[in-house]
Every structure is written in structure tokens, then in C-alpha cells.
Amino acid sequence: MALKSAVLAIDQGTTGSAAAVMDEDGKVLAHVKQEYRQIFPKPGWVEHDPEDIWNSVLATARKALAKAAIKPARLAAIGVTNQRETTVLWDRRSGRPVHNAIVWQDRRTADFCAQMKSRGLEPEVRAKTGLVLDPYFSGTKLRWLLDNGASAAARQGRLAFGTVDSFLLWRLTGGAVHATDASNASRTLLMDLKSLSWDPELCAMLKIPSSVLPEIRPSIGVFGVTKSVPGLPDGIPISGIAGDQQAALFGQACFDKGEAKCTFGTGSFLLMNIGDRPKPSRSGCLTTAAWVWKGRATYALEGSAFICGAAVQWLRDGLKLLEKSSDVEALARSVKDAGGVQFVPALTGLGAPYWDPAARGLICGLTRGTTSAHLARAALEGMAMQNADLLLAMQKDVGYKLKSLKVDGGACANDLLMQLQADYLGASCIRPKVIETTSAGAAFMAGLGVGLWPDLDSVRKVWRKDKVFRPKMAATDRSRRRLAWSEAVGRARGLK
Image (tube, rainbow, N blue to C red; front, side, top):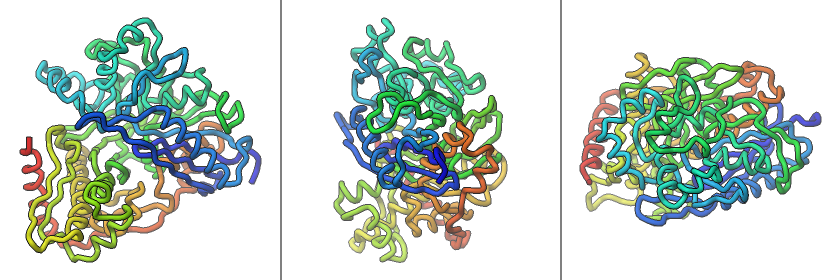
């Protein structure tokens, strides 16, 4: 391998951090994960300790480099991808967080969002940001932090706000750079999608002082270089940053308008490339910045389901039905269907296209014959069904039916889930060789940022297909099961 021909991708996720080392041929030389604490102070509240995040990033980076047998000095660049709306506020002088990070799943600002909606503010927010007024996004989380002990320090210019990418960039550069990229900024409720800049009226609406905000930069390009990072030499460029779902879209080589992917992680996230204009959704989806490169923005429609793989974690940890998450496929395969059981995984409310934070998880259709296998199968079907809801909403917005969907994320290794997904979508699902495409996207962006790959065509050439899942279910069966699912969703939304 030639000198400086590898890229380190930092993939900072909701339940853990990962690091991957990729060579110039797109081969992943090492991929290492590490979980960290989940903090639940109150019902509906979810937090992370930013120091846990940072330590897990350092640990996985060190282990990945060791596993790949790559000396840090041989890295051409570092890419960062991250859980997006999770909100961090830290002291500029000490670099220390002033509060735990408030995670994207957190619902503590639901009442505040409802108040803003009652004041008729959502149309303006939606028109400018492509988002809805929901606790999911960063802006109201930041408002809560300011209202709960941080306001005075913020007004004095002592504090810095960021999504997780900004916090990591600050730490990686030894406090030299306070910046974010457009994809992450587009998830805050504070950025205008067309101008790709912080909007003064939105900031005033949420009472956010501009002094706390990071600089918005293109997703691909050198943000800064490493300084005083344990285990890494100074001077390595950080040259690609994107939110995890946009990074996955990039990592799936969905560079053309109309291409789409679905990431199966803690939640599930379906994104479709819609080109260089931010098309508004009329079907409950979001419009988001996908990436910015060489002065050109690419946008995407997005549908997010808050609970996907987390439903399997709940079966494992909450109900004790599984010893490990990967056991769910064999258990679900042991029955031919879910036996009439419906599982709506609204454990933290419902995201797109419903946007109902008050909805509750629901399991219905139980009989004396229901077994743990039926519950496992129903969980997988619920995960696939909610993604079908998202795609149908997107198809209304773009006016055509998707022929195929690229899939990625840890849960897409589950062949049964992928077949169910193809069946309920009525479209093929294409799984790549590298299913951790958030890491791949960060690596590709970082490599492009320093010229390791010269253009998008060179990235397309190193993307590789693994397996195609084609729909097998009859249209009449699909319609019948979709109707039963819709009825169950209606019940879940009534449990308030």
C-alpha cells in the first residue's frame, strides 16, 4: 500500500461509536464498534455523556488502526459521520460540556413544540428548513439547555453549540475549529435550506444567540487538522463530515437524482436524492441537505422511523426474549407468519409520515397460541411496514414508483427482514458488500476532500453489490397486511 493511501472513518452513533479504515480500492481493512452508556433521567428523556462519546471514538480509532495494521502517520485523511440531531453545549475555554448531550430520541421539548405550533409558526419553519416542529431536532433541545442554566454564559460568548460532529471536530483540532457541515446544520431547525446559512429569524424565534453557533461549511473539504489527539499525530486533515444518514446515502453511491437508500440502525432512515433543488414534501417527509461539494448542494427527501433495530434491543433487554440481537432472525423464521400479531414500534412516538410524538408502542392480536417467535416475527414485520409507509409517502412527492432500494446498516444483515422489506415495498432491496455505509460515506467524502479519489465516478467503481432481495408476496396479500398494519397504527396513535 502506498504511503497515505488509507482513510479513517469515525462513525459516532446513538448506541455506540465505530471506526473503520478504508484503502483507496474501497476495501474496509478494519471496522471496530464499542457501545457506551445510555442515560434515561426521566421517561421520554435520553442523554449521553459527551466524554463517553469522545472516549469511545478514541478507543475505536485506536483499535481499528491496530487491527488494520496501519500506522496513524499513513492516514491520508479522517472522515466524521454522526448521530445528527443530538445536541452538545460546551465551554469554549475548557472544552468541557456544560450538560449531558440531549439525544435525538429525547422528547422533553414536546410541549414547547406544541406551543410553537399553536402560535402558527410551523409553516414558516417548514418553508425555510424542510423540517417540522418536533422534539427530534436540535433547535428546541438547545433552547432547553439555555433555559436550564446556560443562558447567561451563552450571552457572554463563553459557550459553543454543536451537533456531535462539531463537538468531535473541536476535540480533534484541539479547539481550533468550531464548524459543522450543511447536512448536520440542516437538522437543527435553524438553517435556511436555500441559502445554506443560519437564519436570523429562526434563531430569534427560538431565542438562540448567534455566538453559540458553529460555522457552516461544505461537507467535502478540509475542515482542519488533528492537534493533541491521543493516539493520532498532529496534522492529519479532517476532510469529510456528514450526518449519518446523508453519509449513508453517499456511501451507497446514490449520486443521481431518484436513487434512494434505507439505513437500518437504531431507527430506520430512508433518503432519496432529489437533485440540486430543495423540493418541499406534501406527504409528511422532510427535505434535507444531503451534502455540499465544490459549491453545489445536493438535497434529499427523508423519512425517519425513530425505532427500528431498537425494537429488537427492547425484545432482548426489556422482554428478555433474546440472548443477543442477532438471534431474532432464527426465532422469527421458526414460524411461517406472525400469527395475526401486529407490533407498532412507536416506543418513542412516531416519526414520518405521522409526526405524532404522543403515539405509543402497541402489540395487538395476541391469543393463547402466541409465542415469542410470533412476537419476534411481528417486530420484524413492523420494522418493514413503517419503512413502506415512508417510501409510499416519498413516491407521492416525486410522482413515480421506486424500482429498487439500497439497504444498509447493521440490521440489513438479517435476510428475513430484507425479504419482508422487499415484499412490503413491492420493490427490490439491494444490499452492498459493505453494509456499514455510514462509515463508507465518511471515508469516501474524506478521500475526495484530499484527492484520494478524484471524482464521483471513481467512488462508484469501488461500491460493490452483495445480494438483491426481490418481492415474492402477492399483491393481494400485501394489501391485506398493509390494511391490518394501518389499523394498528391508528390504535397506537389513540393511546395518549
